[in-house]
Image (cartoon, rainbow, N blue to C red; front, side, top):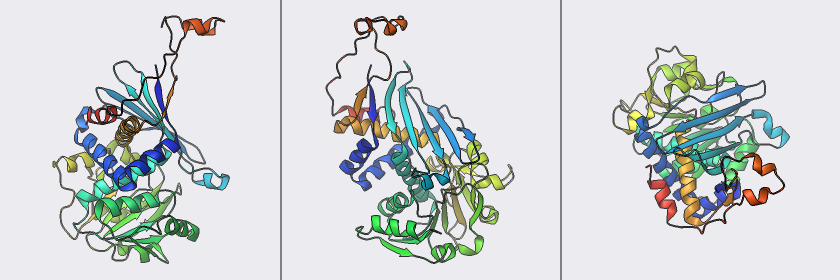
Length: 366
């Protein structure tokens, strides 16, 4: 059997073909569709292996027809060795047979799905008509957050701050041709957050940091906290959380990894699926803060892998790969080692691409 392999170049081609705005919209739609069928999924918190230098995680999830997992790391010091802080890949498999359908890069895709999820949450939590966002932490995730909020929510000004001026300069350089989006460098996190409708924190240090304090926030501001995503790593002062309506992705995971790890288990939160389904409000009044305590959840990667699979089929991208042995006799695995293995393991020719299959692949479980 063939497993479709998608490289970073393939994913970049998908985004270029759909346009960044189009790709973010399709991703956001897929993520929302899956959150709305929350109870269809077999869910668990991710499995993490922590070390002094970072964390390596596995993120599994399944519905009745598809299973997926993501392998992802978080190593803040990697950039000094010329490596990304975050590296990821994932698999989408058929539940009925266990056959892997797709093996894909998820480093670029994780940045896209995180930004799409942030904008989706802000759509139902932030005050209507938000036009200004502070973006604190201008590293690898920053451009994606800026573009998602611009294209999906209509944000027109991004107020930038990073302790590394080169990171801010990189963001400005990458987005310099974006019409309708003003990029304003700021001297401090407090300066960036001042009077902002939305404050996004996307820092990388694996430490209990206090990036945002109550005095920095305007009444009714929405805080999109992206960087706190493992035990011992936070970005918000506890009083920001105590005074806010807090929404999370999957409470059992966020209790361990999110900013709410600073608060007792009795502190009440709402899950995002409840807001999207209309079972709970995303915002209670225009003056109270809202916080999306985002750590990243496997359902978002499941939706992203569905989007990738459908898009690759539509565009004829990816490489069919024999990740699993193909044998005339499935019980004769040892036969692959025999000199005549070529006679007992004959991979079939790759099938012709069906460019209509992508829409069916995405719609079948939406």
